[in-house]
Image (cartoon, rainbow, N blue to C red; front, side):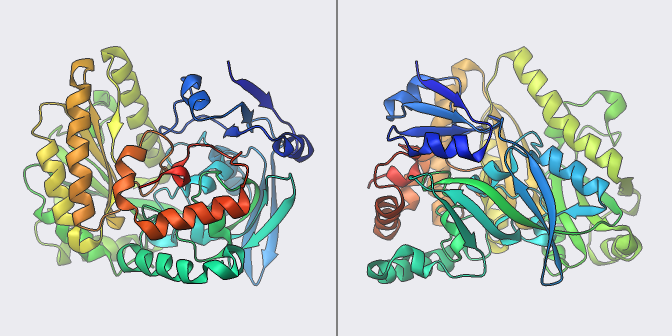
Length: 451
C-alpha cells in the first residue's frame, strides 16, 4: 500500500520533497481526472508516496502592486475560503470554479478557469507571481511579467519558438490549449499539473466588489434548434467589458431539480444567463431583446446573486445524488473551440444526444467552452468510450482544445496524445530533464507521454 504523508507547513513539505522517492500530491481530492480510490494505478506509475497538502497552514493577505489589488494565497486555501475572504473585505473574486472545495493552488496546477473568464480572462492571466518548491526542496519565485525564455535554457530557444508558434496558431485566446502555453515565467507551473514542482503561494488579482445581477434567457432545447443560441453567442463577443460571465444550463441539467427549485415552468427549455454589474442590467436587457432575433421578451428575466449561486450549486448536487441512486458513472468532455467552430461543436454534441445514453450539457457558453456529460449504465461504458475515441478525432480536425479547464491527469491521456507532435514531446522531455531529472514529481503525468 502506498504511503500517505500529511504536511502542515512549508518546512515539512520541503523535507518530504527532498527525498528521492517519486511522489504524487493531493489536496481536496475533487479532481475527476485522477483515480484517488485506486492507489494501485499510482503504484504502477512508480509513485512511492502521496503527499497530502490539505493540512497546510492557510493564509490570505492583501498586497498592493501598481495600483491593482492582489491577494497572496498560501497553503490549503479553498475557493470557498477565498470567496468568503473576498466577500468580507468587499473584493470580487475573478475566477469562480463550480467546485468550491478544491484548493486554489491546485487549481493553478491544472489552470482551472471557472465561469468568469469571459469578462476577466483566465486564472493564469490573474496571477501576478507564484512560489514553488523544486525537487531539492528549494523555494523559487516566478513572475508573470517575465518571459519564460531564460527558464527554458539557451539550447532550447528554437524549440521554444516552434512550440509557441504552434500554440498561438491554433489556441491563442483559448483558456487552455492541449498543452501548456509556456509564455510567461509562471506558465512553468500553471497547467503543468505538479510535474515540475509544487506551488505553495500565489498572488491573485481581485477587483473592488460590485453587485452582480443575472439576466436569464429561456430558449428552445439546443438539440432541436440552436439558432438563437448561436446568435446570442456571437452578439456577446464584443461585450466582455460589460459581461462578467455567460453560461448555459440545458434542459437535461435542469430536470434533476425538485419542482419547487425549478427557475422556469417548462422542463423542455434551456437557460442562458449573463452575470453583469447591476448598473449595466437595464441597457443589456434592452439590447438583448432588440438585437437578437428569436429572443422572446417574456422569456427574459432577472435573478439576484444569492439565488443564482444556489441554483448553480443545486444542479451538480442533485445530479450526483441521482447518479449514485442509479449506479451510473459520469463520463464527460471539456472542449473549447473558436466562435467560428461553435456550431460544429454543437452538431457533434447533437449526435451524442442520439446514442441512447442519458446526458446533459452546460458550461461557459460565451467562451464556446461546454461540458457534455454522459451518464452511462454499467453495460454502456465501453460504448461510451468508443464514442469519445471518434469525438476527439473530430475535435482535432476543427482545432479545438479537448480539455480546456480541469486538466489531463491520468484518465484523459489516451485522448490527448493525438494532439501532441514532436515539438510538444521534446519540450516536455527538456523541461523534465531540467526541472525534475529524477522524475519524482507525478511520474506518469502527461509530460511522460511519448509518440
